[in-house]
Length: 555
Image 1 (cartoon, rainbow, N blue to C red):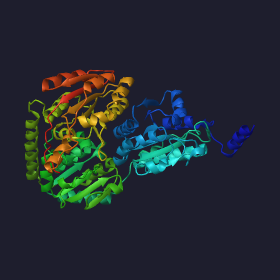
Image 2: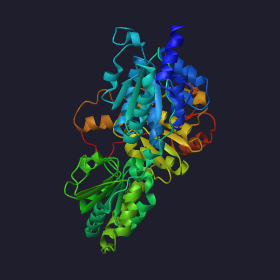
Image 3: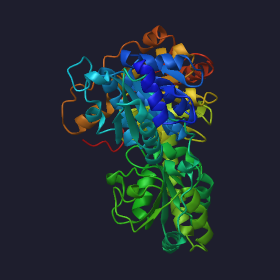
Image 4: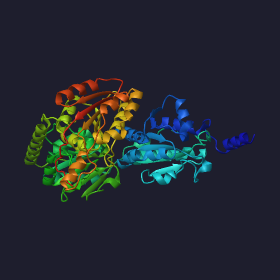
């Protein structure tokens, strides 16, 4: 009777437009209303009730990972691919702690991810209960918004705040739910995804006109583009052509400008092209569009910089700017093109750009044609570039192969996913699995070094269990090659850099994947074609390569 009276009192004080739902059911229905299609996670007793509720519905899929780090990396990759909020979850204590590496990847790359973690019962908070830790203190450096649910009545407000903050600001948000609250009733209605969260920012004409003036006065302009131009690729191409401007891209934005265009100068930094560094040194104006990567050793300190970004704090974050324009590129670029006006004669600059980029392309073509045993990593990247479909999703792990990939791979309509600022080992395979689940009609390939492979390789079992056809390509050179080369160049003993690798093919087969070994170009071509033809199971190709030193290696 006491319980019944309390329920009646609560319903009088907090009327709702819908019947009250349990915390677990409310949470799932609210995520569904926001378009969440899957939750990545690992089982644990502090989330039993939530897992049970997921099993009772068919809209949101639970992806049972082998490790919580991989679950968070999958959520990060899905969000990088879609731009929308993604979700991962884990149990209390060690489960929650193991999420942190993957969540740091999302946080560093400004990717909206919501982490949901179980917690000890409310009566045990702050005690020495098993698996208790102050989750908010633990995750604080990574999650800009972290809350603990202490009452079911607070869930609608807390959840809305966390989801909105994550989506709008591109941050990791976190909610701890004590295990005794899942069956409590929530007095609140489900709210639809608010369309205003994607409302276009409208920039006034004054800063755009000032940008147009600076661009028109330049004699040797360069465009530097990042992922922010994803929805404005046609305008970027038109702008570059009208200005005869060289175009440099970040690695994730490689496919956003035609790689075979005479104005395309490649990437920036050690993994980029020599052409981009040469042209940047010669330029008198740099227009940055939706990019934040800024390797100081490869960027001039004297060039005039104009930067456009929708997030004000990202303008001038690592460099000084002459002019910053805050706005949505989908709004700014058409306006900029409309007021740009006639341009000065830049025929000499265009010729210089074309000559420099052609010399670079000839160089990498020569590198990529090497036939050696073990294989040259440049040759491996050329073969992958030639064979994968033009719209494949390529997840690239962290290591020397990352630099060879950016140096050699020619993108078309590809999507490139990387651990950009956090640069954790083990990113690529979980990323490829999430990409295939999110966009199953596209090929999904993970390019992984042998040092990174062992970090998350057992997620091949996750892919096998789900029938997900991803292809994992391991670049096996028997070492942490980049670290080894840097230590050797610095005159140090490269202790810890050599690897005694397991038989990757046998591990893959034990996980339910189909495995191949490639030791030369012909074998790689044949096995890659066969692997990509698999429809319902993961594949692995172990490629024996040289531990070649990446150009411009420094201690």
